[in-house]
Amino acid sequence: MSSVQSVNWLLRVGDATHLWSSSVFNIWGINSSTSDSKYFLRSVKPGDCLWFVKGNSKGLIVGIAIFERFIKRVDGESMPFEELGWINVPGSWDTDIHFKNFKKIENMNLLSKLNDPRSIIEYTQKCLVNLPEMYSRIYPEEEEVIRVKKFTFEGVQYLKSVNGNIYDIQTHDLVGTYIDDVFTIYEEESDDTEIEEILSSDITEQNISLDGVNYLVTTNADVLDKNTRRFIGSLVSGEESSDDEDVEDGIREEKESLRRILTACAKISDEIAQLTSSLNIRLAKL
Image (spheres, rainbow, N blue to C red):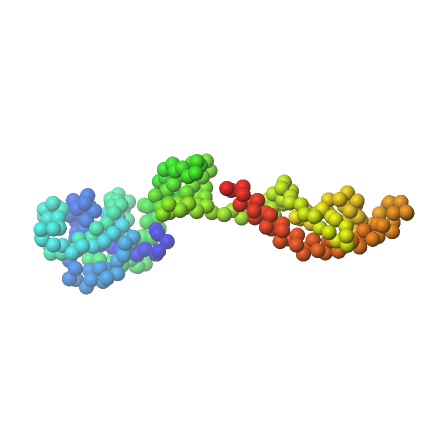
């Protein structure tokens, strides 16, 4: 059944002769003046399930259909009783019940054994047939079929559905919409690995001057000078550099400068990296 809970209704149809003749038109008739018919017409909604019960048969369910709408009969406009085949017994049917997906299920031998004189009954557990379960067997859920046609936008071919959804022509994945001549592409979220790969393949460099010394720094705060790389490594590992003693003083001064550079870079690296990643992703999609 649909995501909105449907109601099951049992409708008595006499010997079912009239049902067989009018079901080809997806129509059944009721008298709207009875209390059970009035309740039915107030409560029924599209998508509800109609179960047709044969009279004098221990409640044998002979047909099933899905309710669509009801229409008050009007002389000269409604289909005549003769065309519907309602000629075997007289009746004052003033309302047409329209349905779809009618199935004849008499051979399933579903005995409801309802002891109720009303002509229309809302399903309860007094019915000995589990109607919701039987519904799922009679109308098994099927995969929704989406009808599409080829669609080209700016030289790229896609598939477009009637409601404007756009699908990749190879993978059939939903990639966007085309509504009112506006093409909207769904943005894909990138994980950290993808961002890292993009940054490593296209790194922006920047000169930073600190204490009169120029350094070349990338957008991910990587210092490119060969010597300073080595000094940064020693800072991270906590190990002292193995350079000759005559350059140790210079190394210490360089370390202090590098500490200040790293502090500055740490503040800006995240924002620059995120901006660069976003720009590269956007550029790749254009």
